[in-house]
Image 1: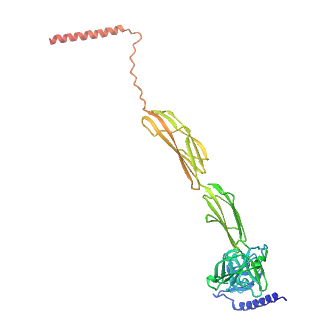
Image 2: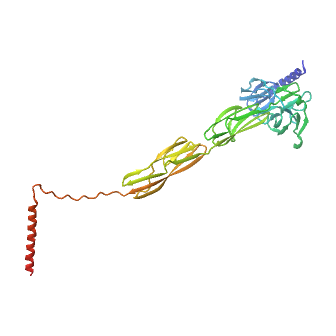
Image 3: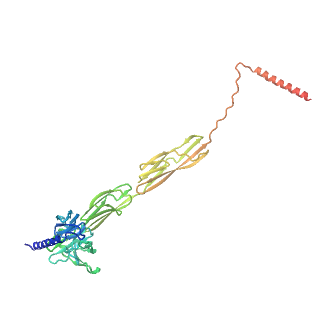
Length: 452
């Protein structure tokens, strides 16, 4: 029997013995509620078990859980995690087997090494985040080796290290650690802050080629963390309002990936493509974070929001003549217009038009109502806007001349003279008029005689 077999046999016996005692003494939780027993069998043996989002311990374990639904998650860096949903019944025993499958891809340098001292061996170590996706192992896999090597190998760069207590999740130590190529940085968590990071040569790093992400022996462990990679690309860098831009991104070995547009979330998948229609100049930012680092990539698109308009009359001088209620002359002209980078165009007085250019026939009328000469300027205005907030206005003037005359009154026609009969002659009429005048003279003479 090998030393490793003897080691694991002894561990298994201790776990079994502890489980029997645990089962006898823990029929209920601390609140007195009924519990059930669960055994989680993990592989590799160093894998860590989370229950309902809280870390419990590494290695295969017995545990008593409150009756009801629970989520069991098993993590080990370099392996695909597993999630099991269990329904715990009172005083019942059940098992969960989580044999994790390794990630086949190997890791290449350049590398540095992080060594952690001064914390419990079951403390959890995270790089660049504190959710289970950033978990890289427990502290006794990366402290100074006694029998075999225990190494946490990471990409060159700055990594934020978080060390949390088992079960409680309380932070034991946290801080940025600068990792340099082929050097080992020892984190002495219990020293004064300015003496906690000690750098030493690590020539073995220069001799390493591509390695597996996780290897473990009886008293040895090698965790090689893959660097995070991310790419962001856009198909256009200059667009007009209303036009689209295609955004593509992808990442590898990232636990969390976020795409933002001017700091507003746009996507969270590890890779993808979106067609966006920004209404202002926009910076797209991809942030890919994982145990191997945090990578940020930017791409900018400039949006032209400016609107330009023009309005021109074909004939700026027109005539208008009116006499009474009758319009004798009224000129017309074509208003030629253009509107670029706009989605709404209105000509006043007039109507809404469509397109980027066109013409409209107008017949201006004067504001003057009474008689007199006309000398007025009629103004037309074009207003164009777009959904990006751009707008522009142009005006055009038409000079209107002419006159408005008074209302014409018709002349009165005299009554016609009576017509004589066709057989009448003027002689009897003349005789009658003579007799009248003669009689009048006689009367006048007699009147004078009496007065005398």
